[in-house]
Length: 132
Image 1 (cartoon, rainbow, N blue to C red):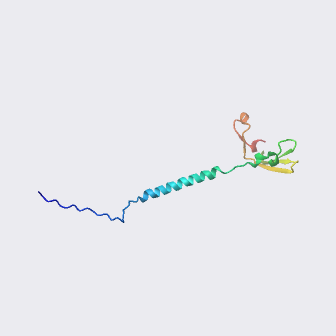
Image 2 (spheres, rainbow, N blue to C red):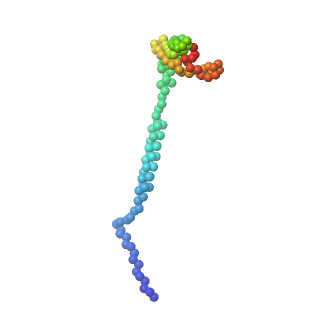
Image 3 (cartoon, helix red, strand yellow):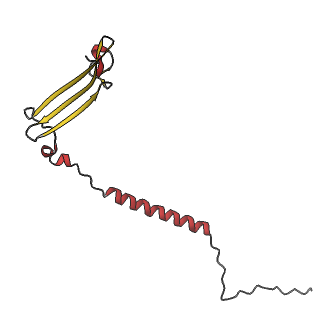
Protein backbone atom coordinates (compact mmCIF):
# COMPACT_ATOMS: atom_id res chain seq x y z
CA UNK A 1 0.00 0.00 0.00
CA UNK A 2 1.00 3.39 -0.90
CA UNK A 3 1.23 6.13 1.52
CA UNK A 4 -1.17 8.92 1.11
CA UNK A 5 0.03 12.38 1.00
CA UNK A 6 -1.35 14.64 3.60
CA UNK A 7 -3.85 17.18 2.19
CA UNK A 8 -3.16 20.71 3.14
CA UNK A 9 -6.21 22.69 3.91
CA UNK A 10 -6.39 26.42 3.83
CA UNK A 11 -6.79 27.95 7.16
CA UNK A 12 -9.42 30.60 7.49
CA UNK A 13 -8.68 33.53 9.60
CA UNK A 14 -11.50 34.13 11.96
CA UNK A 15 -11.25 37.91 11.89
CA UNK A 16 -11.34 38.53 8.12
CA UNK A 17 -14.08 37.61 5.74
CA UNK A 18 -14.02 38.47 2.10
CA UNK A 19 -17.19 39.99 0.64
CA UNK A 20 -17.87 40.37 -3.05
CA UNK A 21 -19.48 43.78 -3.56
CA UNK A 22 -21.08 44.52 -6.91
CA UNK A 23 -20.69 48.30 -7.23
CA UNK A 24 -22.68 48.51 -10.49
CA UNK A 25 -25.72 46.87 -8.90
CA UNK A 26 -25.57 49.24 -5.93
CA UNK A 27 -25.28 52.34 -8.13
CA UNK A 28 -28.09 51.17 -10.39
CA UNK A 29 -30.30 50.54 -7.35
CA UNK A 30 -29.56 53.99 -5.92
CA UNK A 31 -30.33 55.70 -9.23
CA UNK A 32 -33.56 53.72 -9.62
CA UNK A 33 -34.67 54.58 -6.07
CA UNK A 34 -33.82 58.27 -6.62
CA UNK A 35 -35.85 58.30 -9.85
CA UNK A 36 -38.89 56.70 -8.19
CA UNK A 37 -38.71 59.14 -5.25
CA UNK A 38 -38.45 62.11 -7.63
CA UNK A 39 -41.36 60.86 -9.76
CA UNK A 40 -43.57 60.44 -6.69
CA UNK A 41 -42.57 63.91 -5.43
CA UNK A 42 -43.27 65.46 -8.85
CA UNK A 43 -46.74 63.91 -9.14
CA UNK A 44 -47.68 64.87 -5.58
CA UNK A 45 -46.63 68.47 -6.17
CA UNK A 46 -48.13 68.61 -9.68
CA UNK A 47 -51.48 67.18 -8.64
CA UNK A 48 -51.76 69.41 -5.58
CA UNK A 49 -51.68 72.63 -7.67
CA UNK A 50 -55.02 74.38 -7.42
CA UNK A 51 -56.24 76.15 -10.53
CA UNK A 52 -58.85 78.86 -10.13
CA UNK A 53 -60.46 80.84 -12.91
CA UNK A 54 -61.20 84.30 -11.47
CA UNK A 55 -63.52 85.14 -14.35
CA UNK A 56 -65.72 82.13 -13.65
CA UNK A 57 -66.13 83.10 -9.99
CA UNK A 58 -67.86 86.40 -10.63
CA UNK A 59 -68.27 87.04 -14.33
CA UNK A 60 -70.30 90.25 -13.99
CA UNK A 61 -67.57 92.14 -12.13
CA UNK A 62 -64.72 90.91 -14.33
CA UNK A 63 -66.27 91.34 -17.77
CA UNK A 64 -65.13 94.44 -19.61
CA UNK A 65 -68.04 94.21 -21.99
CA UNK A 66 -71.52 93.75 -20.61
CA UNK A 67 -73.89 90.95 -21.52
CA UNK A 68 -76.71 93.44 -21.94
CA UNK A 69 -76.75 95.23 -25.28
CA UNK A 70 -78.07 98.45 -23.73
CA UNK A 71 -74.84 98.94 -21.75
CA UNK A 72 -72.61 98.50 -24.80
CA UNK A 73 -71.84 101.09 -27.42
CA UNK A 74 -69.91 99.95 -30.50
CA UNK A 75 -68.20 102.19 -33.03
CA UNK A 76 -66.49 100.99 -36.21
CA UNK A 77 -63.70 103.05 -37.80
CA UNK A 78 -62.70 102.07 -41.36
CA UNK A 79 -59.66 103.63 -43.06
CA UNK A 80 -59.29 103.28 -46.80
CA UNK A 81 -56.28 103.68 -49.05
CA UNK A 82 -56.58 104.51 -52.74
CA UNK A 83 -54.14 102.83 -55.13
CA UNK A 84 -54.44 102.99 -58.93
CA UNK A 85 -58.16 103.77 -59.13
CA UNK A 86 -58.98 101.07 -56.57
CA UNK A 87 -59.88 101.88 -53.02
CA UNK A 88 -59.04 99.23 -50.43
CA UNK A 89 -59.59 99.00 -46.70
CA UNK A 90 -56.23 99.44 -45.00
CA UNK A 91 -57.13 99.44 -41.28
CA UNK A 92 -60.19 98.78 -39.19
CA UNK A 93 -60.65 99.83 -35.56
CA UNK A 94 -63.57 98.83 -33.35
CA UNK A 95 -64.28 100.86 -30.19
CA UNK A 96 -66.33 99.14 -27.48
CA UNK A 97 -67.59 101.34 -24.64
CA UNK A 98 -69.38 100.28 -21.50
CA UNK A 99 -71.00 103.42 -20.16
CA UNK A 100 -72.14 101.86 -16.87
CA UNK A 101 -68.63 100.68 -15.92
CA UNK A 102 -66.82 103.57 -17.57
CA UNK A 103 -64.54 101.21 -19.52
CA UNK A 104 -63.63 101.34 -23.18
CA UNK A 105 -61.73 98.89 -25.37
CA UNK A 106 -60.13 99.65 -28.74
CA UNK A 107 -59.51 96.65 -31.03
CA UNK A 108 -57.31 96.90 -34.13
CA UNK A 109 -58.21 94.63 -37.05
CA UNK A 110 -55.47 94.60 -39.73
CA UNK A 111 -56.53 94.72 -43.37
CA UNK A 112 -54.63 91.53 -44.29
CA UNK A 113 -56.65 89.39 -41.85
CA UNK A 114 -58.94 86.86 -43.56
CA UNK A 115 -62.69 86.53 -43.00
CA UNK A 116 -64.24 83.03 -43.18
CA UNK A 117 -67.94 83.91 -43.13
CA UNK A 118 -68.57 84.25 -46.87
CA UNK A 119 -67.39 80.92 -48.34
CA UNK A 120 -70.84 80.20 -49.83
CA UNK A 121 -70.77 83.39 -51.91
CA UNK A 122 -67.06 83.65 -52.79
CA UNK A 123 -65.84 80.05 -52.51
CA UNK A 124 -63.02 80.73 -50.02
CA UNK A 125 -62.09 83.10 -47.23
CA UNK A 126 -61.33 86.68 -48.27
CA UNK A 127 -59.16 89.37 -46.72
CA UNK A 128 -60.76 92.23 -44.85
CA UNK A 129 -59.12 94.76 -47.16
CA UNK A 130 -61.18 93.42 -50.08
CA UNK A 131 -64.53 93.58 -48.26
CA UNK A 132 -65.15 97.13 -49.52
